[in-house]
Image (cartoon, rainbow, N blue to C red):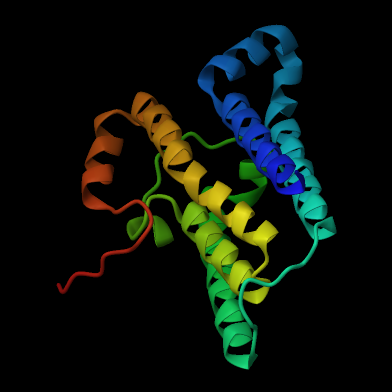
Length: 191
């Protein structure tokens, strides 16, 4: 029952996350909030952060039944993956301008394909995959497996929703970018 509730929490989190990021909800919020809409992004970021922390806290309270033995090599691998994920996300925030991303500064509407965005379209998702995989290898419990599975199942949905929005905002410029740059795993070509 606890694992079912964990899965339900992830589903509610992702539905809420996607709804609040949708253009329809943003337009509605703009009409309702008027000048207060300038705080929408920071409220969205706070809801996302608090929701994620609440799920992870709940996950930490579940029984820690290991699915496989953990040793020095698995710990090293897990730390390597998680660190790579954090570095990728930090590079993404550099391109997306972290304070704009979380709502503390005005959003910049220009289309960017510099830095890490030259190699992958969704570096935050790529970093999340590595962090989740690293965490699962570090703490291979049923709860962390369920959380990783929920995140991995949501990513194609999240990417699809985000890309539809980006195509509406940037049109052919984004479609060209989408054709040239892979979504999650970089493709390094010889020049």
